[in-house]
Length: 75
Image (cartoon, rainbow, N blue to C red; front, top):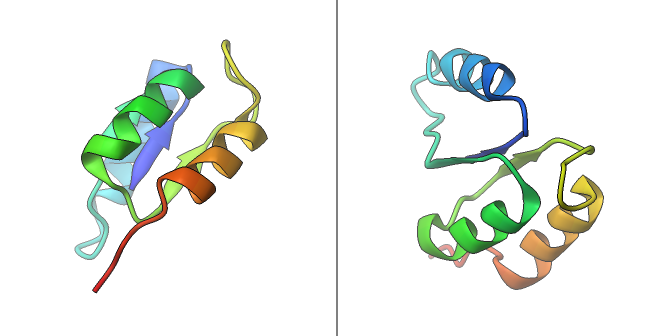
């Protein structure tokens, strides 16, 4: 999972809650849309949790781009 939120406290708290579940692995965190898109090619998340209001891009646009260009290529 990739967590995208410009508020660090929110990212950290979300990560801590999610990591209490054995079958969820947070592979990255980004504070903005551009960083998330750049990171997605490297960490290849199955799921992205994206804040709607980001400082550099609209979260919906970021989610769409991740879905189209960085789709997970599972086996």
